[in-house]
Length: 128
Figure 1 (cartoon, helix red, strand yellow):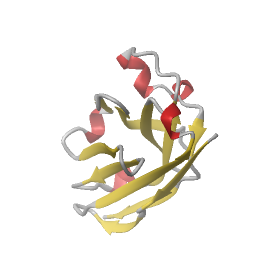
Figure 2 (cartoon, one colour):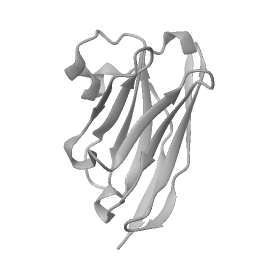
Figure 3 (tube, one colour):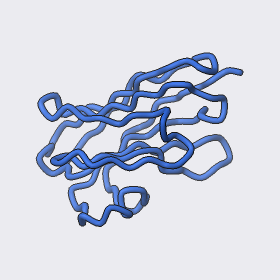
Figure 4 (tube, helix red, strand yellow):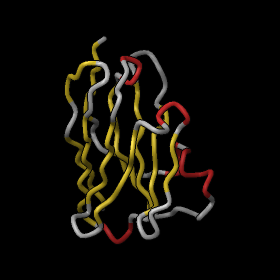
C-alpha cells in the first residue's frame, strides 16, 4: 500500500552533516504522519523525529534537538532529515516510517506502534 525508500546515509566525520531522504510511494494520501527512527548495534530502535503531513507539526527526541531538522515536501512525497553537528553516538541504521492513522495526540508521534509502514533503513556512520 505504502512504500518507503530511504537514501542519503554514509560515513561522515564528527561535526559533519548528512541529509536523509525518504520517498513515499503507493497510497501517499494515506500518510498522515512520518517519522525517523534509528537503531544502533545491540540497542533497541529509538525515535528521532516526526512530522505531520498536513500541518507540519514536528517532534524531536531530546538528544537531537537543535542539530537535526525534519521537513517534508508534499509535492515530491518526500520527507527529509537534515543532520548537522553529527556525533559518533548518532551512528545507527536510520529508518523512515509512516502512518495513516495518526490520532492527533502529539505524544504518539514518538511511539513505534504508531507507524505501520517502514523503510529498509540507511546506514549512518559518524567517525570520531
